[in-house]
Picture 1 (cartoon, rainbow, N blue to C red):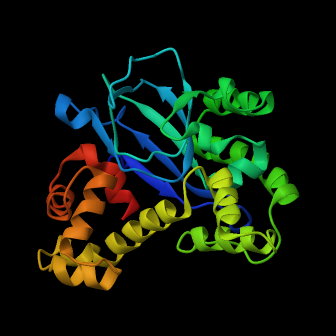
Picture 2 (cartoon, one colour):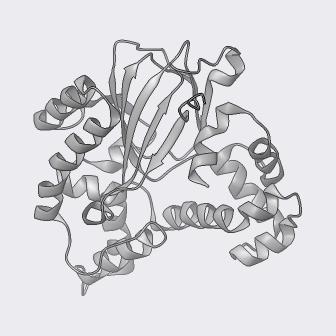
Length: 282
């Protein structure tokens, strides 16, 4: 019996003690199963409030939208929160490893000015302290994803335990409100505008924007089976998600993904490999 080919992409959840720091780890390789059609080597990413570090173990990526000059010499890339969709292209086979951080967690770990990195990216060593650059080199040299994950969590665990806020841990479904509660709790006596400034300083974007991004993600989780089965009624989905009407849902979905809800549902039902991040996320 032949061994099935390895999965192109995996989403790995962090250990419990890092769940309020790391949103997810993602591994992807097209080395074993090269994508021969150029159209399949694009990568469509939605807007996201999260920060990420991506290791290009093999191959590289070029940013297509928004237009950006390629820098193939960079092997470890830091990406800040993105308020708009992003599209990249892999000229050939690629093996990559990614860790996605909650923005306020990365701010606590490094003191990074998160608002300054919205819609920006650069080589890891140009953004974070030297010990992070050393981590980047070690992960890049690791022999496989298991070792990469072990190195990352061994590095992050003691640092996160030393700086993490007290109280109950945030989860993927409520981290924005949890951040708002933390800021409000440490900002007693301050006005609403002051609290909102503190939220933006930690997460890079205003609270209203963060809530919109989280609502859209939750809504597509909720409606996933409906639109994959072809029985979705978007007006009902919009009402269930708290949107004023279907047009409101369409505007926000297009702003975050570059597509209307109907267009996004169509590509997710197709075999378009360039939308892999949506499939593993939903």
